[in-house]
Length: 489
Ligand SMILES: Cc1ncc(COP(=O)(O)O)c(C=O)c1O
Image (cartoon, rainbow, N blue to C red; front, side):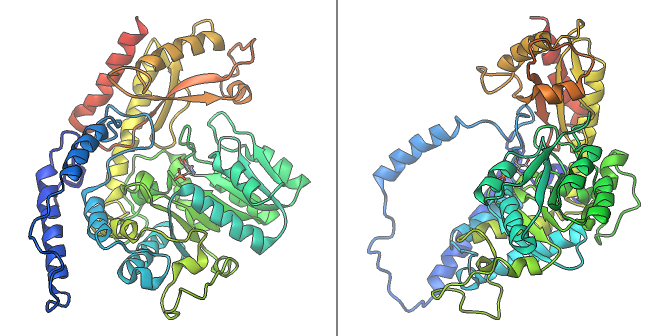
């Protein structure tokens, strides 16, 4: 098999652009043939063969110039946010159908792409090991979370929603939008995982409707202890939703080509591997192809184990959904029009890079290895300290303070952030920061003095590009060199 790590992406230096060009030319020539052949007897309304728009040419040149002011998400030097190149199959799948503009709201809006979407969902169900259930693509993780809570609210009708204090900000917003007053944030432990003892204390006080577990929290990529939460589920009987928007695709590491549990050793920590195995025990899941699924933005997904949750949000309209023997996704989704091209992008991507250890899993094994290597490198530094061991591939670290004082840590860490972030001019690397509330700071760094009750500022690196292991961790070594140099300034 061709080398997956290098063959399916444009590449940081545009290494595969000529391959992409060949495929794009093929898409355009097929498009031409399709259009010419459709009622070939019709005359063309266009009198000239080539219309040349001067305005378009001028504006396009300016537009291209502007496009380069974007951040270099394609490069390993950019590690600030959950952003990377989409795969080549994504670009081809998207472009092919963008030209015919399908809408997966109703079957008749995109018959081919609706079927592709259903096939992608079947694959995702297989990947998370839901034997029953359904799901669909959404425009992103927030929308997927919102729909799952909307369906649960109307299905169960009562109870509190619990999620950890490091959950994605959308959860609090969603509760407000859905008029759910009864929600509670649960503190995290030293590893940024939901503190299950504190969760149980709350469950004793107030009946639960839903507990949201993070499989990859946004800040640190922490993976909640699903094993313990399942024990509580047996006792207190609630709907378990897993927000695996970021981390869900890591399950592909533990699956063989037939989507059975692989016996191969993986680079995952014991904790993470165990929780990934338990994904199937949940009731619903958010999982975003546009994060670690190698697809471009506009591709989230929500999966439900119990199909009754679909019927509870049924919606119909007199002017659409005519083909009732076919899937009309919009009848059961929060969103209306959704891009069929995105479904096609997912479809082609997972045909070429399947979500098991021969595809996405191979890519994500590299990101895990890189993250663990970086943790080790920071551990050896005199100038920096790790905030925690990474459950996935997001590393948080900060400038050391030998006096163990939070103000000193913050002052020094911020100085580095200003040199190595989007705030700097031509930074050698682009990192982000993670700000922890004073309460969480106290939990994770109990030995540090914090007289001013400050929030801790940590540096954050998202190693989601799969090239960090290449060339003996070339870019990680460069990053460490730069960090050490900056610490001496
Ligand atoms: C854990 C988690 N859930 C939900 C979301 C929201 O996803 P989106 O930005 O696609 O709406 C994010 C985004 O980073 C996330 O990390």
